[in-house]
Length: 163
Ligand code: ZN
Image 1 (cartoon, rainbow, N blue to C red):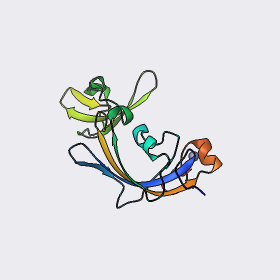
Image 2: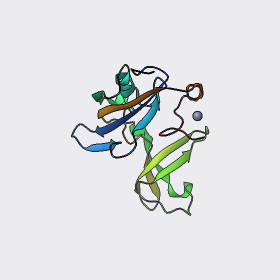
Image 3: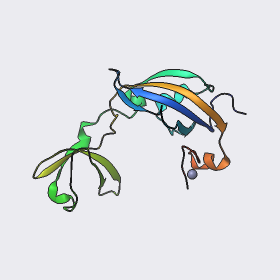
Image 4: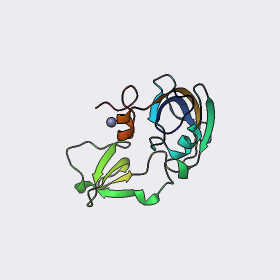
């Protein structure tokens, strides 16, 4: 019986996430809690480290700096793509996510920032890169992970992977 959070336990928690000015960025409250496998980097390191040893019902406030969150904002990840390098049959609009395939085979997800006749400006930074994150968390449940979950490195079932 799991009493505190440690490696290889499945944890569910509710959270609200705000920026330093108190603007709401994301929340689980009102929906299902988020489920993750502790100790497997399923969540950002700056939050995971504070979950260690917590119990069901514990509430915590966590400030995560970008280096322990989604990374620093990288200006080089904001760049232009010529229109003729994009398929002509899709209607492009700002905010749309594009899947880009680099020559080395890597896939990059980039959001469209601006569009003009000749080029599209995209930003491949994580939307929360460079932002200080302020979490309010409540631990909802803790259970031991199955051997299969530990092997896969993620949660199965409600709130997790289905396959
Ligand atoms: Zn799996």
